[in-house]
Image (cartoon, rainbow, N blue to C red; front, side, top):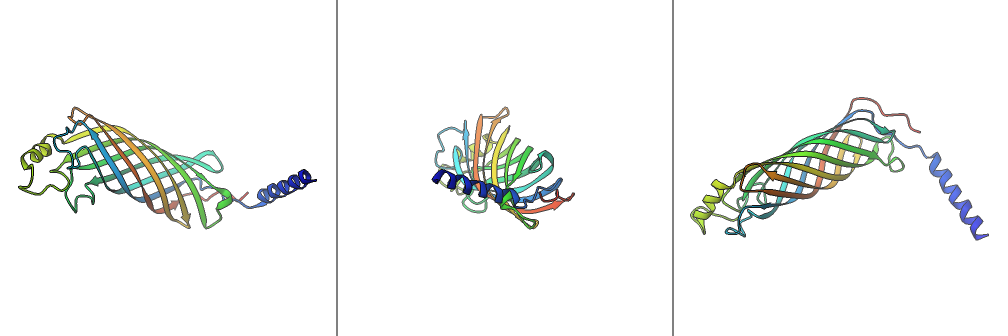
Length: 228
């Protein structure tokens, strides 16, 4: 009796879910967003003489701009597209407060995949899970360290580091985020990691790990599929 009751309840639930209209994803749309994150940047090859000034490891804001162009994908609810963007990191507060060890700019270009959660979405609100795999180019301009002041402690060593540790690199980025689209407004929460390798530079390798928000809008070029 209990088994029949359980099976009947499960069948009723499945029948209900099967009859709920689900909004499918747009065929082609463009997302324009501003990522704002807290990032931890670390580097290998900076030396240990200036530990504490942020050359080897430092946490601060990471901000920039990003676009994602999605087209027809694997099925009605999953889209594949391209991603491009640039973000900037410099000390705790983008170089405005307390100086910086590296003024770092990262440029990404790659592939993005996005799925919609149909049972959580309707005509005006959509929930998406997205993943990003991209190539990353990095340019880092060394400064005189976090907390370093002109003519302050270890000025000679910090000036030498600012001259010697400028570098560029190439690597990869992997990221994932969960976002909600309310009409054409986007807000999302995501995390990501980048690894790059220095090109003919004393800094041989770097990592940038971040968690933060993605805020912006969506432009629809083609209408979505009809609800199913």
